[in-house]
Image 1 (cartoon, rainbow, N blue to C red):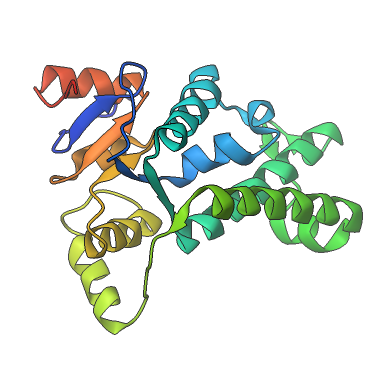
Image 2: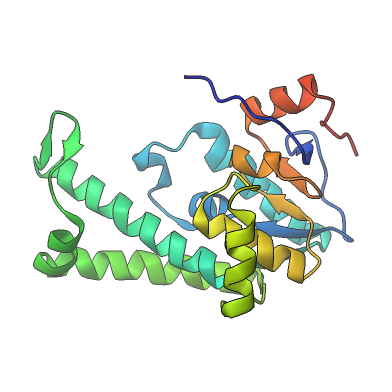
Length: 212
């Protein structure tokens, strides 16, 4: 089923944009996954994802742009890498039934020490790259933040991680995000830098594509 996005953000096509020294970007977890995970191409990532996003992120760093990451992104990145490692191992060892992986997360985590060591190595290397390349965006998860999180639920059509990300971006005055996630395009007051053709097409049709 096609996703009907109502685009409220300004959208910039990163395949036609050049980062600037004055730019400040939050880099979303999906981008960090393609930048840092060595097996991203083996887990269903599309060619444009593993080429355009790493290139634009590196171009931003080379231009002197400020890029940010979040501890929440590190948690999500760790989860994604472990999930990918489990799927790769399961498919290589016949633990798939009718296209579904039968190896459960906790089984993989505790019953296969060699694979667990490999997961830890991948996660540690990926997170080290993220923290080396990007500044940390402060996020405090306390009572007021939880209230702000809950207030966003009816209005911001993103997942729980991204609700907190949006709150921390707002608190730190960061309005630009590099992401492949179309959900961000529905949020007013931010700029979405993306190579997602569906998002770019929707933004073009709705007059929200920005050429810098």
